[in-house]
Picture 1: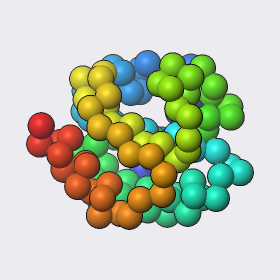
Picture 2: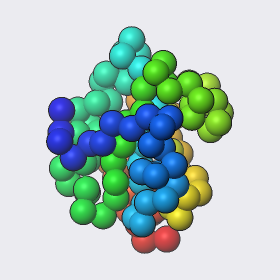
Picture 3: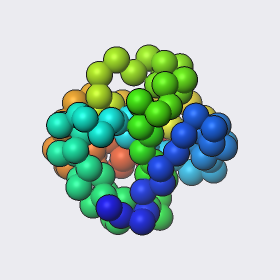
Picture 4: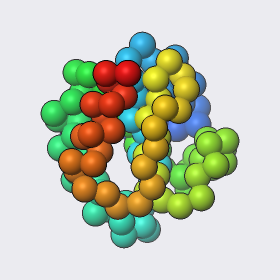
Length: 110
């Protein structure tokens, strides 16, 4: 697990995501979710490559149901991309690394 991935909660979501001065990618996941576990190494690789441009976070939906409900997370893994406190892109399900990299570039450049 990359040290560049920040594990967040309902308690610090506002500070770490909404008030962040740089774009944020939040992986909504759960420990029992097979596709989430398959996506984890990809998230780690992305964090190593892009952490200077975008904050990479993970939020466990079982432990942080308030935030998951607030953003209407119905299926996991769901990745939301935030910029200036607003959701600007999203991805649902297990997707390839290059797809997420394309979304990151789009968010950074917008």
